[in-house]
Amino acid sequence: MPMTSSSRAVIAISMAIQNGSLSKLQSSFNGIFAIYKKQGPTSADVLNTLKKALLKEAGVANPNPRKRNKQPLKIGHGGTLDSNASGVLVVGIGEGTKMLTTMLAGSKKYRAVGELGKATDTLDVTGNVVEEKSYDHITKEAFEEKLKQFTGEIMQVPPLYSALKKDGKRMSVLLKQGQEVEAKPARPVTVYSLSLQDFSPPYFTIDVECGGGFYVRSLVDDLAKALSSCAHIKELTRTKQGQFTLEEHALKEDRWTLKDISQALQPCPNPSGQQKNAKKAKSKHKPTPSKSKGDDGDTND
Image 1 (cartoon, one colour):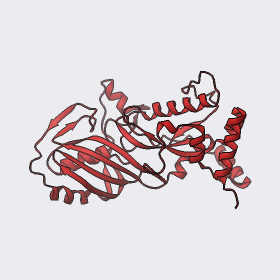
Image 2 (spheres, one colour):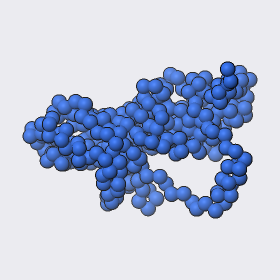
Image 3 (cartoon, helix red, strand yellow):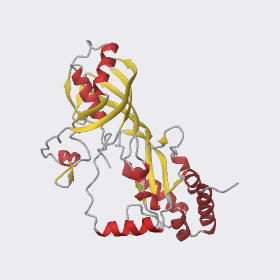
Image 4 (cartoon, helix red, strand yellow):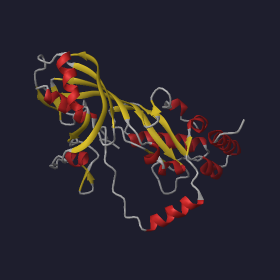
């Protein structure tokens, strides 16, 4: 039976671990995989914890994951989850950091628990309550009917507390510094599916499948306003990102080991010589890339 590229990667990484060769580990550890981000730490904190664990296992003395320039392992993530959110966080390692955008093309899925009657400045439970309204008039039937207005191609205003930037600084940081920030203009986003899973006022649970640049916090806020009330998110879980699902792919922290990750790693496709030359030629004339738009509540990174 022919050996797959994934199997070859596992063998190469295993040999590097056994031989204690960090250089071999660098050359063989390339691809993307998914981990479980728990509620509390930022996505950047989670990534640093992961990097530190891998470097320590690989034999690096006193690893400092925050020093990027001299790191033997290059790691990045493909979509921020804010500190209050949990779920699938896709990670690229080695050459996989360059493939995150390509390999994560597709939809994302979330499960959100909201609370009617209270709005916060951050649109989630971490913020301060800025408004309270009655919700007694909202029925399950009315709630489900209103969901239809937020399905398909819609316009959405991103939250003020987000990783979107003004003058090179994150809007969330500027707000925390006491500066005034204007909301970004509404932009088109896509909602592939939206369903009510539980309705127990003041709480409700919805499942959302959406495209990039979508904020579930804004959805909950807009939905409540459309129902003549207000709301905020209490819990947010990303259950799917691209090909990776929470149930099948997201590694819990006790499995953040070289062996487990090597087995879960989706290897990068090997570019042909022609593709490499084309990429080099393109990079010479490529303008400085702009920062990607945030989505799904990426307040803290």
